[in-house]
Length: 120
Image (cartoon, rainbow, N blue to C red; front, side, top):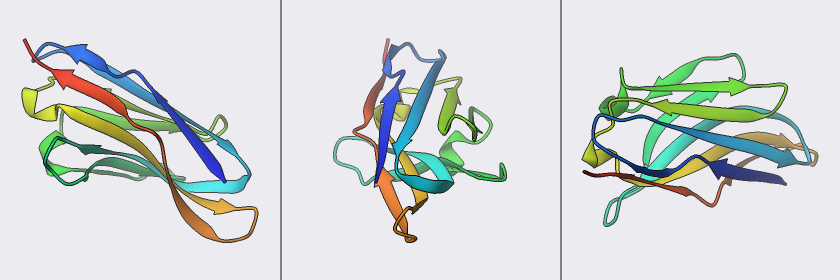
């Protein structure tokens, strides 16, 4: 199993910045992909950004050029730097990991979520 703990959410004004962090722990051989998804009230969960073990990144169209994802493979952490935040970035942000477990299967794991509110 993999436990994911997020931190860094909060309230920020439009145009401001926030940094989210997620730490993975548990029993696994490696985490192939780590990422962030978000869900606004009444909406489906959507991709924010993902990053592979080798550093390849993928971003949702709405955050390209404003958000940057990074990871520390030695510490099993992933971070999301969010700049130029907009009210439509408001939502619950979830850390995600695709990991090779000690049972030799690949599974998806989710964090509990951290709330981001962009409002003046």
